[in-house]
Length: 508
Image (cartoon, rainbow, N blue to C red; front, side, top):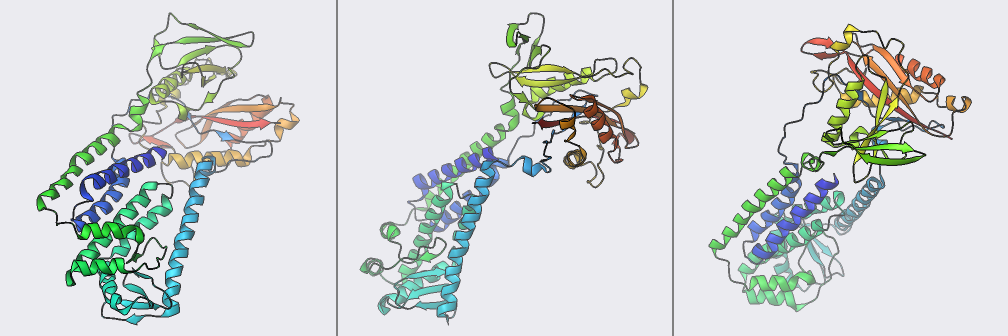
């Protein structure tokens, strides 16, 4: 999302730069209006353009690593995915949106209050509201607000000017940017856009209103008095001190030659470069920065991690840690890995999940030089390890299945709902108080559970590794109580799917 916002702001900067340098001084006011509106919208659409890439094949027959379930001794459980993903930036964003929405509603209420308080005088194609003891003049849709203290000799010119705003629906443009300010209050370019289009609105109205009189007389009306200004960003005002000089300069400027409309063709190479940029800045390109390097072997000696370059291994994306104790560096989840690292990790996990291989969990930790290393966390050997099971060969890769298993209550084949429902089930049924009675040492603990969903949708072959045998038995019994599911299918046949579920809790 942050990358998307950065691209939106960048594109808006480029669009406004083209407008300021090449278009703002031309008298193609209506075209400039549509340029500003169109490019503001395009800046939100262009970052969505991506070039589809061929996905790399994922090794067959591997255990699916499900999202981690996090528990605490007080059973303060992160029960929903949205809660797990909340950050201070999320809170700041929504607080800002709420604040700017309130500001918008307050401004709107001020307009409505003026209409209700002073009433309207109906005219042919607009409604006039006179403001007692005021010298303000502005319009909102087809409502024209006029201060009674404005000299009568100037009122007609002002009404003609504001009528153009009303007929051209300029208020809609300003409201559009006002709504953008609510959802992108942190984006300075929205305010720049709103200022630019407000000025274009005045150019359009001045061009029409000044036709009924000499431009010199119209300009004198602008300069004759200093009127009050209503500080509301989505109304069209006759007098806005910061704009008067620019309006006069534009009214005295000669009409631009039609050939200068070719400047709008600058949009073609600009749009092309933007589309190319967004297409090439997808996540896949970022992942390609990871390169294979000769494996570094890390070992644990006397409580310290030492390393030595390997000579008998091929270059890999991941380094290797060998030691009785796991490293104390930062641990990564599978979602933190690049595409290359994830493929190498899953291939390794797949190799050790086959029959006859030792039961273990493979974990990923931080290494040196922005590299990551895999470490082996051995599980207890299964009593039936030496036996073969002909059904194991029937397991199908989760990524190639036509229809994945479905948790009760979820839409058919909904992977995200499956993960959320499984997390909720474990969170509701896991007894975190057990760790207090078992004498488990304090600190962060992990349990790994492997299980399969067979062709009937039942949970089978549950195996766990835990810091205490009672916790191991408890979590195995818990997973065996999972409800029957709708089995997965591949090529029209029901198949089995294997999963690995990590559970983390803290013992105080």
